[in-house]
Amino acid sequence: MSKKKLLVLTGGGDCPGLNAVIRGIYKAVKQQGDWELWGSIEAFNGLLAEPINIVKLNDENTAGIHVKGGTIIKTTNRGNPLSFPVQDENGNWIQKDVSDDLVQKIKSLGFEAVVNIGGDGSQKISQSLFEKGCPIIGVPKTIDNDLSATDLTFGFSTAVQIATDAFDKLVTTAESHHRTMIMEVMGRDAGWIALYAAIAGGAEICLIPEIPYKIENVLKAIESRYENGNGFVNIVVAEGAKEVDGDVVGTKANDEGDNHIKLGGIGNALRYKLEQLQDFAQIRTTILGHIQRGGTPIAFDRVLATSMGVKAFDMVQSKSFGKMVAFKNHQLEEVTLLSATESYNFIDKDHYLLQTARKMGVVFGD
Ligand code: F6P
Image 1 (cartoon, rainbow, N blue to C red):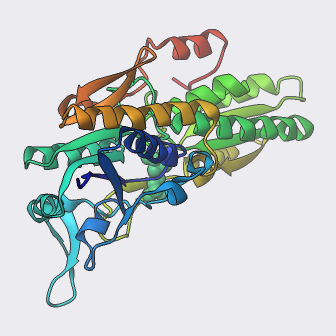
Image 2 (image 1 turned 60 degrees about the vertical axis):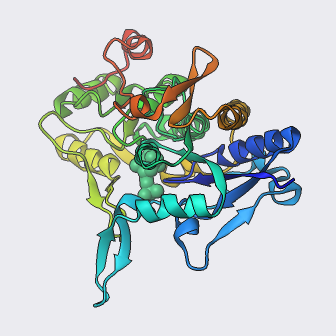
């Protein structure tokens, strides 16, 4: 008897743990026996490509991948089937909705279910495809931890560990030189990586998108550490942080089909501004960038990612389509894609970790 076909894909920015999800699904599929697992290369692009670019997953190509960063089936920020970049007859790039063709193709290839591992953008795409009749299930991923339907996303804890390791190194050099070190971390519009790294590392100042800062408050906090002439300061700034009445620092992406604002540069902007306002502290900036997304996932993320993969296959078997796996109170749950994409997970002003940091004297600049 021929096996039922399941398709998995990874979309949007990569993050540590994607391969552990893929392996978790594969192992569960193999164990169950009635299904076979295929991967679409570069998210939906593999399905839309001519010739089609999909790969059958097996023991060989999934062996040991749970410890590997990235994704063995690749990913892209430029694969939204609802606004897909295609060239018109004059060679100009235009955006076209190819989602109906895509859903048709998934069916004609005999796939009975699709698991889309992705962030908020990918899960919004999943919801639209579900509405068009695609039997799809979401698995949330992002280092930013900005999905409100799940307490945590895999990849986040690894990113925090990477940021904390970097922070620890910056502390010793700040101390030796009596310098002020600014470390810029990722996170888009949420300050989770910054807040966790600031608490774990012991930062004096933490600037996050949820709390616009006043430069004079940041300066005052630095000044107070230099009063005896021997101070040093370590600042964590999230890429999406901004001054009160200011704007985020970034550039528009110039890749066809990618409409994101590329955040980045607030660390240097902050440094220049502080340098103009004082001369007692030498300031240096470190931008961690994509280092936070690469490499081996820590054990916690491997476990979370693997269990989410296995749960996704459970949901395939029970036909829980239009839903996403969520980690809630240390259990895995199913939530609708619609509710999962309704709102972002921002740091609430009453969040216990924000309160923890404030009560320890961490300055947020407000
Ligand atoms: O969403 C994950 C993330 O790494 C953000 O923290 C960051 O702003 C963005 O992706 C960078 O995206 P890109 O892959 O386009 O560089």
